[in-house]
Length: 406
Image 1 (cartoon, rainbow, N blue to C red):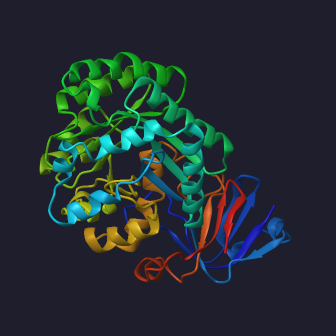
Image 2 (spheres, rainbow, N blue to C red; image 1 turned 90 degrees about the vertical axis):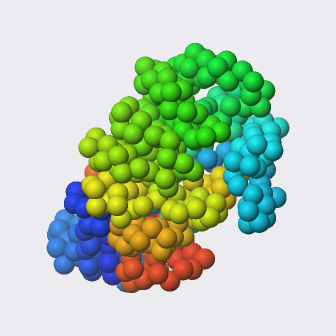
């Protein structure tokens, strides 16, 4: 059983308290036994029974819980760099999609990729995330958009999860957009999602959540309500891509159906904020998407003031958020959304864990939880997120296993 000592500052990020309460412990120590945390606290209070454990030196650095990226589209084929310049010159996301680009372009490339190709790409992404301190990843389908292809993506996530020790949480996003072959018969595609894809994914235990992209060009509230109800009937917890490009009532629907989270929310209404606060829906901020699409970001200060917990994630995908660099997303949450560094960190630890139903296992450094933590070469959370570097993480541990050491 190892003992990590000489921790300059440890952010335990326990769930209790407000968005900015990260429960700092200075001159701390952390002991773990196998995959679980045994003890955490000030080194001067270390129990005598643990004093003789083999010691490892944190070098006076910052220690944080393993980061939780609670919104990614992990498995996809190809990239969409060609759209980057188009958007810079003023072509909108919806205009690109109408021309056959956007999500439809990625669907074509994903369907064409072999399972082994997709597995290797995902393994590479996950290893790079681990080097940044990310130990838990929510992974959405959504680039298959057929029964066979959506299940294939979820099966890929199941294989990756079995490899561990990073934790993967699978989400069914068959309702991402209507695929081109169903463009003139969208009712048939909605029926396919409700009557075939959802029952198959749930029956085989391949997904925990059912997500819908509620937006112009994707799915209106009326269809989303039916899809989410079908998911709930099969044991899948609702999630939504909501109010990203327009105020379409996505936040209100998230509250109505008791969703675990509503994600994006750049265009959320005041009524949507109130409804989410009333029922405890987590808002998931995706600042890379706001940056790449050049739209005003999620109004974090208004959400936090209303009592809505705000998670921060990457939205890693090949189009609107082509980066898995969660620490940089935290810096963007600070600069674009005016979240404090402490608020952003809690948003990528215990609040993010709440958004994907893992709070009892990950997201904070407490006895009994998984030994998931990262050692950051910084003296404080503020120093880490203020001084933008390629990577300040010098060690990542997941379930007691070293994933990365610099």
